[in-house]
Image 1 (cartoon, rainbow, N blue to C red):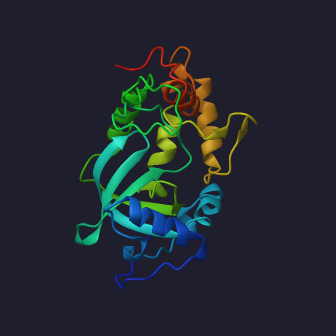
Image 2: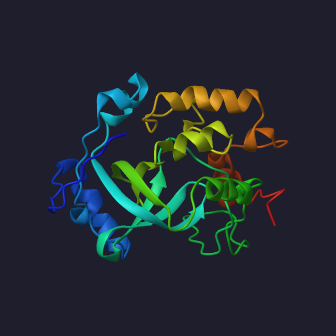
Length: 233
């Protein structure tokens, strides 16, 4: 992947992001979107048809280093002038780790003072740490800002698509609408489908855990309903 970077700061003025950017700035102390001072030019000779399809959805690109790995699908990047950016890895949902800060949001599990970890949550985090480490130089190709103010991106270390590797290894479940049993529009890389099918067939990662539920189902059953049997200690 050949990328040329432009140092001059640019303002990303996509109307679709306006409300999300305001929300992100209110919720975090991380650098605002206008500090992204990069553009991308990727040579066709270095991309597959699937990757070209994904790249057509990219809105902004950030060259940075890994500052922190929070869990299997969330990292913090540090860019120029020590600006920090919270990143949510696209196309995947990993088993949840324990969260001690808890906002009920109408939850029925009032007696639970925190959100317990899902089986495989710690292993998923370690799997990501085996692919990237704090201090590693990466490139994030990003699509949007999510509800929590995080940039939703694919992360590359050299030519390695970190998101796709997590899915191939069985730790990144593709996001689904559980009621419709259909894969949602949050998947940008067509290669993610085959990667998940391979991991599921081979019972890799979380797919090999007995009685494993999707992260979304865990959030519903445990965090909202208080049904946390088998929670990770």
